[in-house]
Image (cartoon, rainbow over the protein chains, first blue to last red):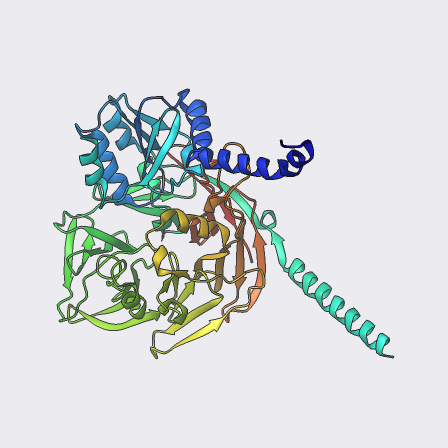
Length: 151
Length: 379
């Protein structure tokens, strides 16, 4: 029989264990999910979907070659309905290129550049069940691999 | 007695701290004291604002123009900083090779640096002379925002040492840092001859470490000097173009905290580099004001990268407090000027005959098809 006093003694340990379990079960990108969720809502009045989605982010900084490669990919035929492009403060030429592309969103004020989402350069954010699963930096070297993967 | 001695030491220590603090406080002045005018230039197109740090000033008949190379339309745009004078464009000749950089001598004489190891002298759309670099060296002419093409005595060229980027920057950084920064060429009998290579990276960069956007350079034609400023260090390198000798000078800059170079392993981590540049003090540029024989060292002070807010926002380099450190011709510190935060853009600072222009195209103030500057007179 467990007496009340031994439960009391074990309580802090139990609480710590419980906290540890909860912390471990938290998704890898819990904080980032919150930031991204707020951002999508504020800028595009949009939610992270429960189905799998691929957000290709082109910030207004970083390597020019990466920006160009990701933009070319967004304009190509492999950029399917699961993919969403977000471009921060595009110039007039880019706006003309993406005018008829419904799944490319324009962040006019460049709010994405200000988020702690590892978006100093082009990135792919994979989401599912309203959470971020992965944040993958896109470089000139791996953009082809990513497009192959999406096929 | 012992107690009195200790008390005296403490008193002297406090006194020295207070006096140092006062000295520094005294020297920092508010930018508003020097503000003379605000200028808005209608560009007509937005694209040309992209390369803010690459604008050059050209003065004709006492009118200062901001000039911008438009590679797409193959022309140079001249934007007057005085409203009463019109903007205009000069068409360039059609050259098969890519134009990397330019230097305007006058409206009829423009030098174009191309990627075909050549420099063209043009009169509007007409090529007057093509100078080819033919010597047997590994040099291939390249382009770098921090070492733009400069021409002095009409036939001497200084521009970025061409080992940058494509050859070594990513693959062999150590070799890159062991190389010189600028290539100096001369025209002799219509041929381009290598006169000198100038500018050395500081030794701390040779320890298989790197620093980001390492340097900036300025030319003082009055004294025939090229001066290199390094972003992480108080040191500058002064090269005498006549004697070809160089020396390192540690400039007084009490406000600046020197920062470490970074491990080579971080070179590809753009997010890490962004955080580093925000969090550390950086000398973002060194500018020579030939009209007043003064040097301006541009400093951005480090700030916290992450804002502890619900939205998860971070600061950018443009949020960092901006300072100008003004030095005389002998690099003696004269004053430190503090600017308003989140208002100015440190990468577009231009020396004109009317004063110093500082861009106000901070993301908070940006306007489409417009360039905004404040004009300052610091001395």
